[in-house]
Image 1 (tube, rainbow, N blue to C red):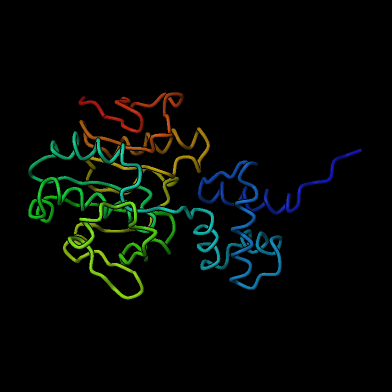
Image 2 (cartoon, rainbow, N blue to C red):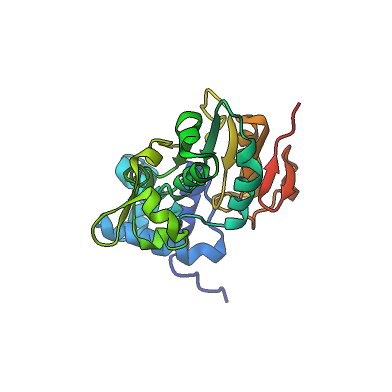
Amino acid sequence: MSLAPFPHELEYRRIGNWLQQRCGMVFPEKKRELLIHRMQSVCEKYKIPDLNTLADRLALGADNELLYAVIHAASTNHTYFFREPQVLDYFQDHILPNLPAEGARIWSAAASSGDEAYTLAIIAAEKRGLSWAKQRLAILGTDISSVVIAEAEKAVYGMMHIDKMPATLLPLYFNELENDRYQIKEEIRQLCTFRRLNLKNHPYPFQRNFHVVFCRNVLYYFDKAQQKQIIEAIYDVTEPGGWMLTSVTVTLRDLESRWQMIDNGIYWKAYS
């Protein structure tokens, strides 16, 4: 007697395969329900009757708005200011003071709604001074979702995004709006630029290399082969002596990377 298939098994595999081929994102069995729930929300929003119809429309590839909505729903991950302080403390204490005085470039490679990029700008303003940051620092934030890129450019956040941030920083770097919402001040916003980018599509189209790359809370969307390709592509656009910072729970040990591990989530590119 054969076992009955899981609910939405075919749809899970069809949509999951499309996401892997289009974006490199992998949803293993343990994330089946998460993917199904997110895709059902897309169906509701776009009045699509069922997941099979959604998979059919994705296969046709004619509706760019729907394609981006699916990508956004699949990649959505709650983020907030000053996330994973262990990595940020290393950046603040060991990397930031030694960035080139003449100027530094930082890349937030999975920027989502901009929380990470603006966090780095605030840390830089606090550690090296706002004057240095305005004259010498450029932060690029990229994400596969055009929806969250638009949110990052607006730089307006509710309490869920900022409640982990030191309270003393709020009046210094945010303007208070209505309904418990806050907007990053213009002088900090000017330090950050946001663009849409799929990390799977490499080599990356940058004219200048970066001194620091943050690639946090995104690698687990990819399989091992794609993870290796991404971190090697990041290596190629990082200055010698530069850094890549990942989540503390991500290890690159079994990827045979050119990066040198300094600590959990901290990797360094040696000088030639």
